Image: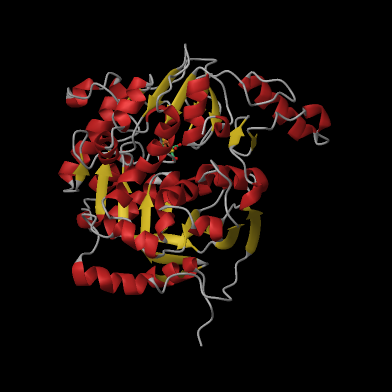
Length: 471
Ligand SMILES: CC(C)[C@H](C(=O)O)[C@@H](O)C(=O)O
Ligand code: SF4
């Protein structure tokens, strides 16, 4: 009998082309996604060495980070910032020159790179997926092995459809039991990062398991895998199940008919075997997780909405004490300050963490029949053109617009300040994105990471609010 293997080990073994020695392996890559920020030098490298792209058919390019999320009718000319415009133009030219599929700004396939991969059926269980972006971990929700790569690695993948990799350690994170009302996937992953820290899973591929994970829809599973990187992990994965298969079936690039059934038979062999050994295991009880909110400038600086900021004076370790002081000063907060009721200026509902249709429905359920508080600016930015169209079909756009939210076109938007959607210095934002680093949403901006429903509640009240008061 074969040694029991984890999901990660099975996907790895199925893609290992050659042992290169010294712990390095050549790994076959099933899908390569590209966007404008990290790809230009990879293409320059190909040109310099007179190489072509080995498998354009397994590649997809899209511009997302630098694109404006309104007034896009003018095409690339609508991008005011010349550096941003150049990046998007360069990606378009590279896609054209190397014959790659490209989801243009006005295409129905356009959206944030990690949103459109699954949507198009490019993301499949058991596949290896790479992209020059850390949140590539998102695709692990389907039982794919998906991770971010550097620009020189992207060049290697473009030229050979393979990548040199070392095997990672494995970590099992179990969330047992059922979540309470209004507690979401975002709260699970923030609670995990609060527990293990931003370096807690360094070097590991995480597998998330337990009833609370199995019970999540695919959107929630993607939210969790998306933020694996914020716990330091190389990737996050969830065992593919019937829910995942049903989600994939019928998508444009997924296998169809008999090929789908055949693929499904293989996908069913992927979940970790009973007795498979993980290097580390962490468990949380779902019942202990509440709506979460970050108070500092690292995703691990997080507490429940009923919680308060820490008191640096209570901290024994001087380095840690100084770090807390710095975070509080940047965030404009005091020690032991309650988070519930803290006034905010901006609300951002979007990003590859939380801009799928399920996220927008959750936010709309809170916004419906209410109005954004005076003086608050609230943005809803669907993750893709398809999510936007679906939202409009369901009337979510009307709910949001009537409630005083702005309804935008797809893109990374205010998740990071590479496009016109930015915070002004000192502005405080309840955001559904994944990073709250200093200046992340604009220089001097202050970010509180929350779930979509919590963000909508903050918009309505004009303050960080326990969504359970409005649900
Ligand atoms: C721009 C890119 C390199 C970066 C990443 O890799 O994550 C960005 O998407 C982010 O979220 O910070
Ligand atoms: S939405 Fe944010 S986290 Fe996701 S790829 Fe864009 S910038 Fe990175």
